[in-house]
Image (tube, rainbow, N blue to C red):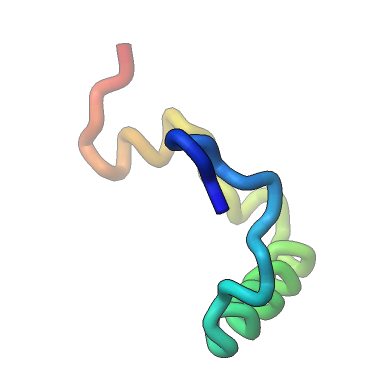
Length: 54
């Protein structure tokens, strides 16, 4: 559990809901299978969202 606003290094599986744990595994596999060209850079994401970066 995080203390004083700190983030834990890894999530304690005992504190996760069963469906949450399953989704994390699926998402991890999807990222492993994804083509690097499918990812957006910070600049590309900001442009699509209409956010101006300084």
